[in-house]
Length: 91
Image 1 (cartoon, one colour):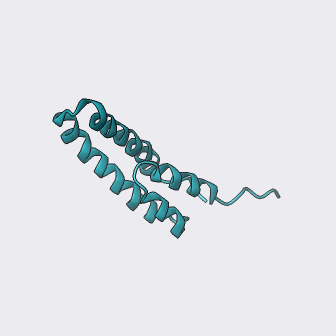
Image 2: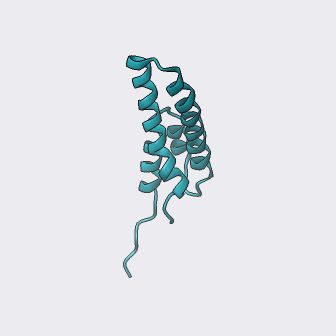
Image 3: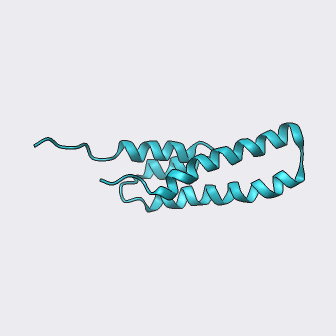
């Protein structure tokens, strides 16, 4: 099988990073400019992760369900997709 889509490999950590920025802003800074900038970026990364995971040819229902978990779901789905790859056969 092939590696997971590059878009998924880029957006999964981006989703986690933007969530960390949003939570830090919520807990300490309370700056509206950060929330209004990073919030939509996080939402787009989240949607891209879920949709890209669903389009993967080796994605099962568990991988798609994991991708829907906010923040860490993309990383978990990426890990599952990588584990679902067919092992190399010796011959």
